[in-house]
Image (cartoon, rainbow, N blue to C red):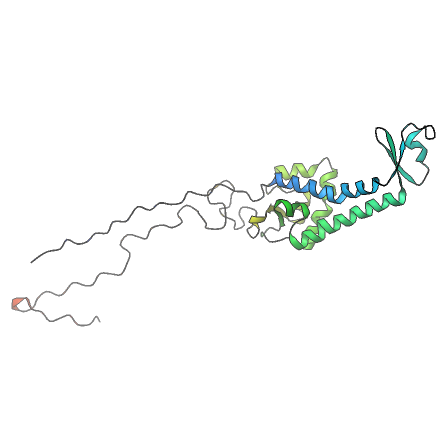
Length: 250
């Protein structure tokens, strides 16, 4: 009679992926500044250049205009001085510059941004404006955010300060409109901790799409798990070791 040693299964060592580095999807200030200057050039600087390129220029200090721009104070012109010239623009043309700038602002910052999630500058650098749930901000949120751009720029650049020190890197327009600026790859995930985007704090392992690459992902099965072993045969009841086969389980 040969006895077999029972098989013993040893759990193989399990390796786990390293935890993800802490990631803040709103930490994109460098790209936000780049997008801002792109939009500023398109909306304000470019129209001004186009109109002033056709403006009348007079040599500064000309005998006919000894007082420079003071000569035009009571006339229907807008005048400003450069190093060598006086640049003279009719008031009607100057108003057209501002109308073009306002139209460009509405088209770029409000309409385009509410339809696509980003202005021209943001689309070029890979940014999007989202709500607290991580979805594209709606028209009302984008409008409020864009209107407060004047506050962010006009009050001693308060927008640059608040976007650098607030959680979520939000300027005043974002705080009022309930919006965030994130990388395009982060759209669809809530941008703030505590709202379903990984553990409820920045700087902890696993901050990313819920459950992905978090410690403990892929734990080994519990030792001994599996189908139960069959019951042992009953002891012999008659001489010779014979026993009737076990019946079906009850």
